[in-house]
Length: 372
Image (cartoon, rainbow, N blue to C red):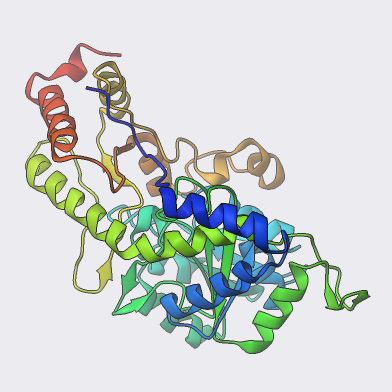
């Protein structure tokens, strides 16, 4: 059996919305863009949403709109996609890392507190794999120290913490609509969410060449707009998001049931009463990761490592900051042991059972002793 890791969802209504937008709206800043922003803000539970052409630009522009500048430090996690740190450099500031909680793979608040300096202006937690970071503690820390909080929710559309959707808890939230996300615009796209009108206005100007009027510019801005056709698809995807997330949770429950109790296998965190994940990825952990990966691939089960190299050990960060390894041992351990197995709303019960059977066979027969 062939089981794909992910598969973007696309149906006739989305195709029709795209065609309608192409035929009847302005291709840039058409009606669908502003309606998508309005509906996304309502869904997240904030007053304002500003669309961008990517999640990376959403993070970058959000930091600039909050006033982050050269000489400032932004604290974040070393275990994420590199954009979570690159956006800080794009804003002219310095990324500072703190190690993760190996149970959740998210920023450890205790480590974050130890990493603060007088130059720290913001904390940028990442809701990795669709599991919310510990926002109660991080927001309390930010309030105590007078810091801003930018939520990287690029993998966590619809996830909740303490009954609130992520992206509505910090000062700003940022989302990506890349094709592998829980919802997509069938291309690159992003969104900034906030309750701060001034921040929203600055972000809207920055993503549109720094305009304050059509040919009047009061900021050094960017061309980072979301295309109309992508927004039209996003509007339909947003209507499906809750149902898709529930399907992901159902699949996750099946994985928990079938894979629990295997010695040498750690399952991802689930709903603990405060954090309600959306399982962008179902990421397991084992010291036999590479052997298990090769076994799964040989059996037709697609799997992938997110992320095989922590940000601080990426060549560019080693060159810029002199990291050598060992600075953030939990992040480095996760990078060596994490493996994401198939997770998308259309997975069938038969496919899930097959994935579990193949994993159990690996451990039951001690196949790690026989595979590279």
